[in-house]
Length: 126
Image (tube, rainbow, N blue to C red; front, side, top):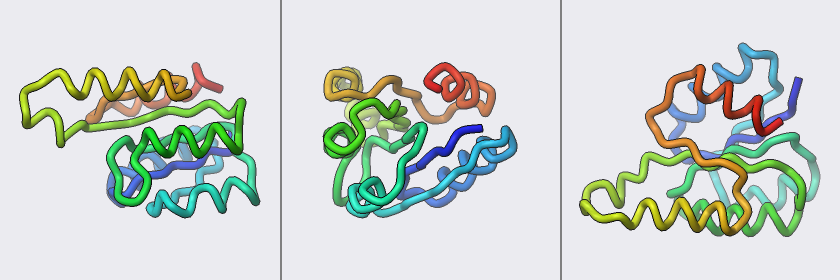
């Protein structure tokens, strides 16, 4: 099937996504350090990149920009729980996720999500 890179600093979330996608036959690589992604993409190509929105080093918006510099056509799926913004009770999260699409993300998936939703979104992007 597809070669997928997951970038998420939450090891449990990354492991769950890897298990779901792996069970569907995808070859999945996980990276927890967003600042290493440009080096990885300089050496390897992927059919899809899944990135958390809020991470240390590069956040998801910076990640999208970095990916677009190296991989102009690779689909990008942003996943986010938006915990920083849900607690504030504002619409900032909506603005940030819209910005991710403007910066080049192809889709955004709100955590928590069902495995079927992840799989269907990935299939749509591929």
